[in-house]
Image (cartoon, rainbow, N blue to C red; front, side, top):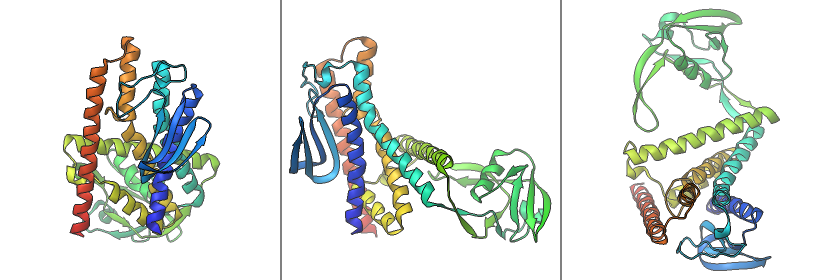
Amino acid sequence: MSFVIALLVLSMLVFFHELGHFAAARLFGVQVEVFSIGFGKKMYSKMIGQTEWRISAIPIGGYVKMKGQDDTDPVKISDDADSYNSKRPWQRIVILMAGPFANFLLAFFFYFAIAGLGVPKLLPYVGEISKNTPAYEAGLQKNDKIIRINNKEIRYWEEIGRQINESTGDIVLEVERNHHMVTLWLTPKRIEDQNIFGETVTRRIIGISPSGKQTTAYYGFFDGAAFAWEETKKASLLIMQSVQKLLTGVVGADQLGGVITIVDVTAQASHAGLASLLFFAALISVNLGVLNLLPIPALDGGHIMFNLYEWVRKKAPSETVMYRMTVAGWGILLGLMILGLYNDINRLWGN
């Protein structure tokens, strides 16, 4: 059942991506010939207007085929008024960007839904205190509740580390202890640590861990929208950083996951509850949006690159250049897909 849920989630994300392209294309009067969820052999289809809506055999991915556009052969064009090619470069760019935008918008709504369901948060109660650390030497005690750092209110545990690292020099802690307020002065210690990409970073610590006391934070409409906006931005930045680290070799190619990993983790998230499933679906949706904007021919970003060239130079790239670059782009994509699948199989065998 969880496998079916994972496929449905991925199909929905692809559907909204392609729906973005479809809506923008129709807005500019472009005929959409095919709207397919999945690739390969056609399993089911229905004509609605001038568009054939399909469900295809391979349920991962999908595409929208507009009149005058063919990713498998970019030199196949049409000059008809309802053709993609007849539109101005800026209109084509809007059509191309509408797919990734739909993914970002969908992620925003997922995060907004999570905000309404309630977000688990650790409360700022002190658990263990390491010896010979700034917190130990300043007299911080177990079960103290940190109320303010440098006069800034602390509501949740996650805000403590951020506030300490954003400050410079000594810090002032106001804590609640046995219903009394206590003020402590500390000099954070600098340590070398590793970030999520395995890089060595320097951060400031005071030597405490959380007690584990939790609450659930519920957000109203405006606070929920602000939460969704910040989470969408954070997820987008994380994906962009991950791509950059992969390209520069900071993250090894063996860390690249494929379709099997995505389906597996989505299935696991479905077991953890609705909020977890929505959170992971939002992350994948942002992933689709960011990756499709990469300037690789055959992706939306590659087509945007071609249209920007035409917009600036007032002429389209030569058919030979477009064909060769598109073939190269497909080669890159297929190579990444094969690498991801190879890593997935290795992980399965390893487990």
